Image (cartoon, rainbow, N blue to C red; front, side, top):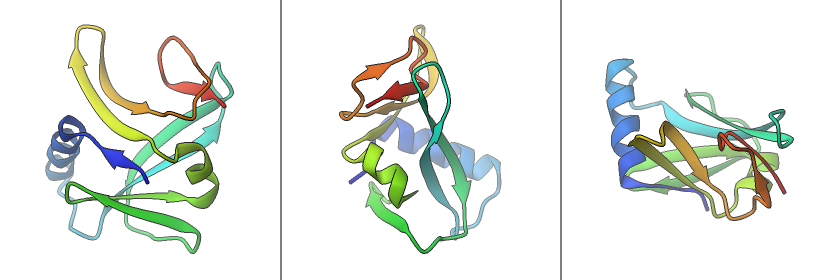
Length: 108
């Protein structure tokens, strides 16, 4: 399962309205190669389901990821911070054995 914090949900909803997206859109999260630790997180709005998608719903938000990414993201929570230590979305991933200083890449 992949979940979303209340702060991240509120920020996603604000971005959704700013972009004028219709209800067919969902949040797609994935893992791609790259970054200082080897793997990086990717997040975007999407409205095109794929055959191997894993679909989760939390707090009324639809979160989707491909099967390969799900193997790295199982149990992850999408969070948002607007504090002095960094603003933006963060992935709280219990599977990560190492993360880089900026928190945008990880290793397992």
